[in-house]
Length: 203
Image 1 (cartoon, one colour):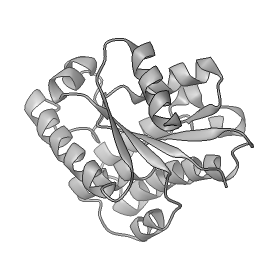
Image 2: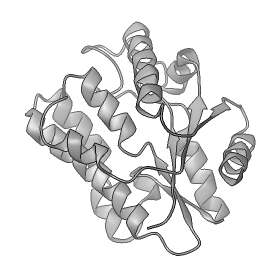
Image 3: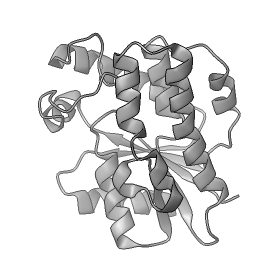
């Protein structure tokens, strides 16, 4: 199994942009995400997963059903690690850490999946993108693009979003406190951010 890294951060911190840029560069780091635009081959079958998760949670589906969908996301990320080609270093979008913390914050903290997620292989390191909640709020279109798994309560206002993101950040850093964590500050230039991520992984 290949060594791998995790790209972590709160919602709208820029992970998708970093991973898309890495994919375009076609270098030794292999960007791994279940964002629909980054899925290839038979993995395209899960392209609707992010939207389906939001609908299932907002629609009051059972905890077992919502968490089973979340496990599909984790299983996909793990599969990309164990099937990574030689000479490529997978950089995973959040791995199970973000899902695990969100489950805790949103009351989805029971069932068989949590112990399984924690039993999965550990990354060589974590790159944490630091973005203030106010910046993330603007990137979300002032709440227009939020899904129900990105804020507290039924209404995605700035306060509900900010409180959730602050708790999410604290939970993420707690989950990876025993790993090597390298912090990358927010930067307006995505190229500079990606360069920083690559330097961090190389060092």
